[in-house]
Length: 135
Figure 1 (cartoon, rainbow, N blue to C red):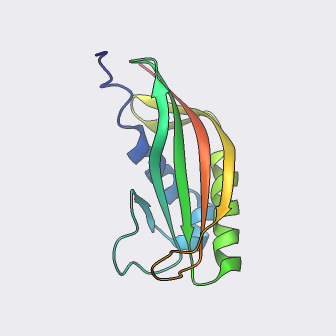
Figure 2: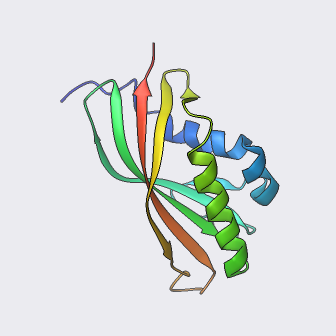
């Protein structure tokens, strides 16, 4: 197995970058999470997860991420997901961690998918991202 220690820390950096993006902060403050929406979290909120892709072993990651926009209404969730997708595609390349840069982001799919258990409004976007290790 190839050593991937340089490329792995980027997802937390992506979350932090979204947390600092003025357009995202205006909608959710710092409520951008990794993996799952914390129980009882105020809305609106974003959740970012890695759901697929592959790396060359050490210097490059072609990943698929999932971005979920949770909100009190469908229109608020739509505004949030649109904003998040726009931010992901802007200001590239951008530093995600001391060892990684986001080089590209492309929308793969956009789904309206309210939570099946709670019916909380939610959009889900899958986005292909290119992340590069830097020295």
